[in-house]
Image (cartoon, rainbow, N blue to C red; front, side, top):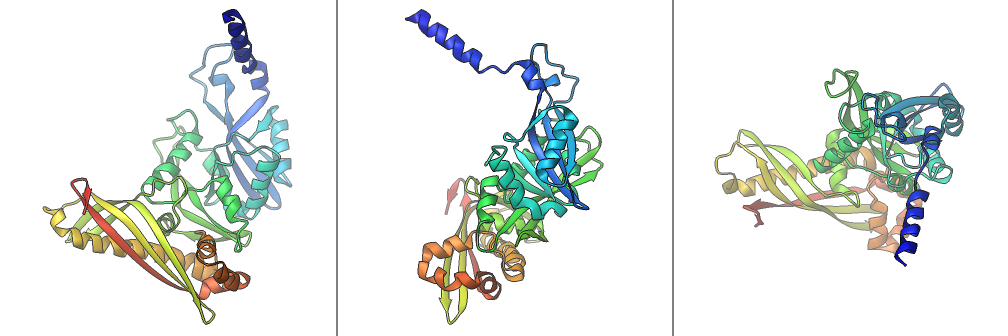
Length: 374
């Protein structure tokens, strides 16, 4: 019996191996960038470099772990096919961890995700982001640390969310929001720049805010403060729901960390007017301060912190709901859950009603002292 089990184990282990020759014919995409200009799509793929990561020979540590190549075509699919001919490899984007869309290509967001899911078995947990300018500029930045540049992009999005500076979004969530009544979504916005010491070529990437897409096109650019408001108003399902903020108080700066951030939404509809009451609750602890006895000032800090939370949320609502009639925070789901009858009354004119609705924002912040929330 032991011999039979050993044989089965060997067979199973060997059947999971991929021959080195097969790997050489594949381009396993780790990140994908999509641009559009003059009627032509450019798809930039950052893919795993098998020459630097072992196989039948030892690992070549001098070779880059990721290779960047691009293809062009009249459609995204034809651009990927051109890329396959160019590299001599079969492009596999099902494992891509990050997809970045240039500003001019955001109109194709829905089609691109549909293609990725249906034809290339796309990763529904892949991070989706936008680029100020061209996505190829972001794809071509080579970070020194990590196994591949894409790891740094993921880290940037993760760290920014932990600090409450942006709201990460996955392929699944983007697809879901684009099926909503206003077809609206906000993507974290990358910007490439020069002068970085963290990369091989001196270029760099920062998170510059957010890109609002509504009605099938890029509509507006959000600031980091407005993206922070989105993160508090609509925390991602897997978010740790934190937000760091610097408050100006008593002549100096006090940095606080909000955690357990949670929005409570109560809609009302009366006389053709939609009214939305939003109360955001959070616990708070001090990260740094120049106040000698900060906990003696806890009520003042809580008040200033609540004002800042409201200010960021109001900025987001003004730019998205009021200016563009764009439901970017899943407000429609909250209305449905609260009252199906109310939703029936507003669904047909939802975008117009969002623009004229009244939004009442409040925040309740509780200060932590010595590890205990008072």
